[in-house]
Picture 1 (tube, rainbow, N blue to C red):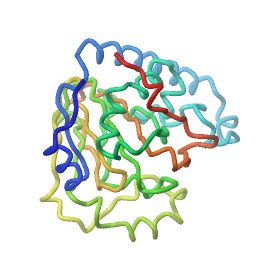
Picture 2: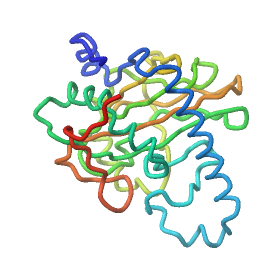
Picture 3: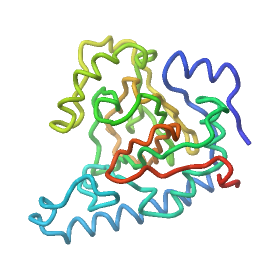
Picture 4: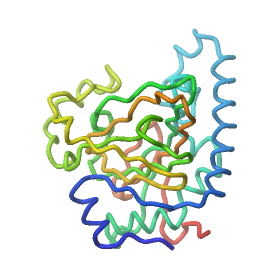
Length: 258
């Protein structure tokens, strides 16, 4: 089972993000991508068949509800839409990494959020620089794992980060939280763009990043497939959730070994 070495842990703590190569096999990723594309197709069909007036009346915080943003490349709550993804959330390999980052004294975790942000020939837009905690609830003790199901370059929409920014803008987050629900992707400006790091990855690589690190993604100018899965973990003592209802509990003794 792959574990982080001390240098990797120190790099994550310093930069607020870390790329880990060849974490999942190509065979695993091919299967996950197939399932994800099927779920995206289902979501697009549901959205198309749902009357506009019905969508407007439904609470957007309902877990695994109508995927309103799917035509813009975002499928929320994927772990609650497909049991394969929920099993992956509880994969011992991922929980082992969380143990290394949060500490062995953490006995259980909660799944704060799961989603897929994808790009293809029709969905190419970039994501502006932002911090996730601008929009989130609970404590800033969360870490996301972004799983790449394709080779991703700068030209096909790779993630980008400002190293060390997870340590600097906590006061900025507090000020923005009061308007969290009024806008999506409140771009963070007045930062040194020359410090931006582009994370080009291969199939099966993962990117781990802190909930306060400034990040975004590049435009998919090639129009290539860029499918990914993102799971956000937090220690179980924090029971906040991205949606209404309780966050999924992940007990270490019940993790799934592959």
